[in-house]
Length: 365
Image (cartoon, rainbow, N blue to C red):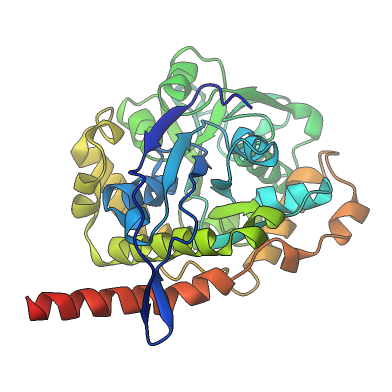
């Protein structure tokens, strides 16, 4: 299929040889074929680990040949994966639940974010009119990255929790970054959901204000009534089951990258990213935003106990109340089939073994 409106970042095709230490595979590449990972907005800080892994050489380290594909909306990235255009997706966990309800089987193999990192902003000139989501009653134009995207349904979930009727919520696709900022300048929307660094750009230009903040766990729970895991690496279950070696290599790379994030400062992380990722807001603003929300990253990359159920409950607000799902379909969801921690568990020993061997080599040199 043709992938439209994409910016592709390619990692070198060379793969590491299979290495075994005490029975642990530390860098495996039995299959060196290309893995395309489509991400719902590579330059967003909520998806930072994907590009950082490339910048640090993590994919190559663990023997996988990866091409990152940029797609502004997570829903479109998921559709490309279902159609077979890409093998894995970097997007919000909720898409796996959606796909199951639609009769498809997909699952998350690594959880990178404990919170959505999303903020609902409203135009500065509406500060006296819209003080809480309940003020959306009577009609509001809300900006989302795409119809069917996580921002679309999370916005609906916020409205539902505030008692806003479905007929009063008018979703407008405005993307992220420059197009989101333009929508605020042109007053195309009243409010909109976005992430860093777009949040800082809007606030810095005094175009808007924060209505609902979901960059941190406690604030997310206050907004939705439940905690909400967000960014994951996921794929179609059949593909994952038939490419376990490659999937393990990707998950190893993500686990090592998340450990690197945990051990470094926001400034060090920012400087490891491509300069154009923070050019629009400036390095200082980018670093400040990252410092504020670094807590959202999930170093262990496992699905926390009960987290998937929290997402399902939040989705009920955004889907059932707005007529997208029926209660019967939600009741039939098998959450255990939407994620697995097996690859994350294996990554712990694989990454530890890699670094132990690397340390030994340094000591011998």
